[in-house]
Amino acid sequence: MAVQASLNAADLAHIESACAATDTLLDRNYPGDDGSRQPVHTVYVPADKFNSSFAAEWGAQGQAAIDAYGGLEKLGKLLGQDEELAAAVAPRVAAKLASEPIEDLRLDFEDGFGDRGDEAEDAAAVAAGKAVNAAVEAGTAPPFIGIRFKCFEAPTRARGVRTLDLFVSALASAGELPQGLILTLPKVTTVDQVKAMDFAVSRLEEIHGLPAGRLRFEVQVETPQIILSHEGTSPVAQLAHAVPGRISGLHYGTYDYSASLEISAEYQSMEHPVADLAKEVMQLAVAGTGIRLSDGSTNIMPIGEGAESAWALHGRLVRRSLERGYYQGWDLNAAQLPSRFSATYAFYRQGLPAAAVRLRNYVQQTPGAVMDEPATARALANFILRGLVCGAAGAEEVLALTSLDQSQLTKLAHPRLASVSK
Image (tube, rainbow, N blue to C red; front, side, top):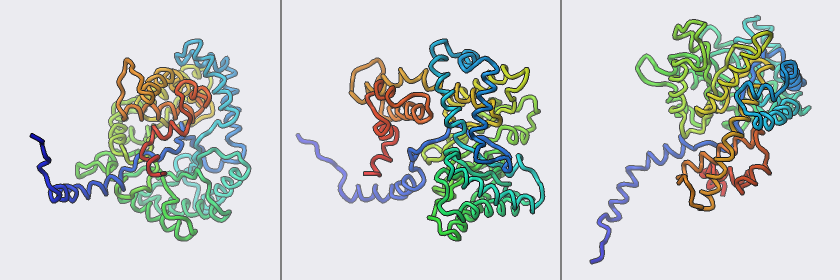
């Protein structure tokens, strides 16, 4: 006896209706990652210290610091790389320091600038906009660049808004905005502050004739109130949905957050339990939204007699973040660049052979020791793609290992993006 379906068209229509709001929510609020490049780090520098040669100077300083230590291969071994891996990573890091030592740069008008009076900050904000335009025009600007202005708490709100306005207006006066422009809103405590920022950039878009949504911004998670509110809710989980499509990233602020929880200075760290809890909440909050995550910084600088231990610490913390799904972090000194790139490149190069085999087996449907599901295949493709984009591996090397080029990896890592582009 043939089995026939029991539910009729009306039943299906009822189910479709019941799920309509969910469909809208998923389409609007959970678009997934857009497949664009994410920098491996963000460098913060006082706004008035930036010029067109800044990135190259930092690269040279980083290389000089590691040369004085004994070279990049020695650094690699300090960071736990075996001889073969250290030898493979070192020339790639040297090339990176020479060609693109800073991937993302933030000209800082907050802690790194301080209160110098309105006249001085007005002039610096305009000068920063002009300097960024000049660096972009000269081809010396990092791929991603922008400012961090003062927070939207009452004492600094007007100053922060004015600096943001003057900087964006100076950029816009020269024509098209830099492609990799990023704006950073620090010390966020409530959803309302993020809504206020959304209003500010929306108005700037209207005033300067920019496309709606052109001015995205990142939110710095530096206060306990954004993780757990006075009502017992998690404001950070509401941010993406309060201003859909506007937030580009959440950046963890190691020291402000730790100090707010009265962690003594000696124990304030990216790996303190309070940091891990906050970052896990952040990770849950933005899953599927397309908002990127960044870990914080270490204030132990590789300078002087303590350089070796500082490099070892920094490299270990970079690796720790990567293993936990935080693919970006902060760097505060040029001497941190070698350990940033060495640890990052080693992470991807160590994982590349096994990931390539598993992905190739998945794509070619070759029986293997591991039976991966589509979600894991996406993660494998994304891992390899990140390593390729940041310079840890070359295009020909990846193609030989996986039989996939960058466009094919991108389609595997971001299938929804691929379907939308058709």
